[in-house]
Image (cartoon, rainbow over all chains, first blue to last red; front, side):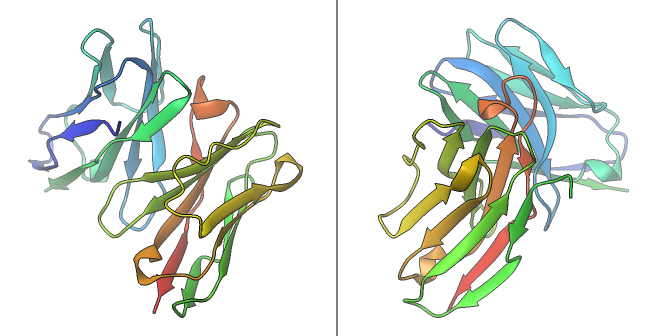
Length: 109
Length: 116
């Protein structure tokens, strides 16, 4: 039931782009994305709702393909502050919500 | 404070002892969640509370783990007869609605538990 994220880890230079994928075996109602910096609590990035509505407040975008039960997070022109571990969280039927396996992102100068 | 507050921030205990971890959610949030994060691992769901509904305990790893939420606010996670594999950071989160249907889960800083 835990969604699978890919890649597990990625290293970028400042200014480069990255895509993080989240895939579930179950039909999804919504997808959340969070970033956790080392030693800190996860912080919300955005939520994607079934039907296409997207809510977020960072300069990061995402897509939600309901048919494929997948979501992708797009980080463009990465900054050093983007470093951290990214988690997707998926809500499916039966009020079930699970966080993904996590993707470690490191941005270097 | 305005955020989710957890205590203690660090707890070192001996194997076999009981521990209690406390979470004070954001005022007005109906949903409260407990997650466990082992070193370098993801977020393992433990339990959630939603309003006055019965809690979903499906993620609790054993009957040594229990949690309660009093008055729809503060929650306590209790681990009895602690084992070394219980060592982890225990994160609490709250949201206005279940699973943050219109927004986000707010996480506390976590309680780091070390079982010797």
